[in-house]
Image 1 (spheres, rainbow, N blue to C red):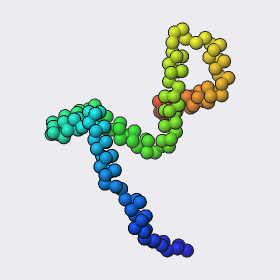
Image 2 (image 1 turned 30 degrees about the vertical axis):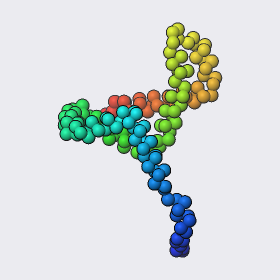
Image 3 (image 1 turned 90 degrees about the horizontal axis):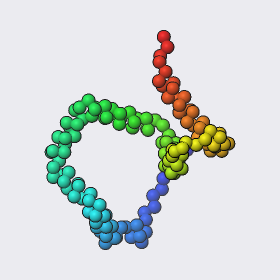
Image 4 (image 1 turned 90 degrees about the vertical axis):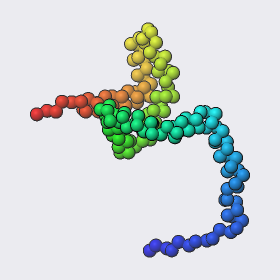
Length: 150
């Protein structure tokens, strides 16, 4: 059976500890404004607000094109895809790719690696794991592009 939730009123001392000091909050707000100003975001935001009608008109015109409609449809589909899948996996793959980008770029230099170097690389368990992932993606793409059979 469920138990009642008890409420204990915090003491004045505990509430004072948790209360944000106005001076500290004001200092942080000013530091944030200074950083936004230095980065140019405040002038950009000011310009966007002052010319909001023109900006909205440009956006509406862009959306009313076939490309704009396709763009919105694709964005919505991507959001639905990310909402339906475990995002941590996609983030992990992205991080792994970015972390090893320099090594991957070096492999694109001329002359291309010899076959024996490629075959030797397959002995690495991480290379085999990556190849298995790429083959699974290739299979999924192939299945998606398969012509329907009658």
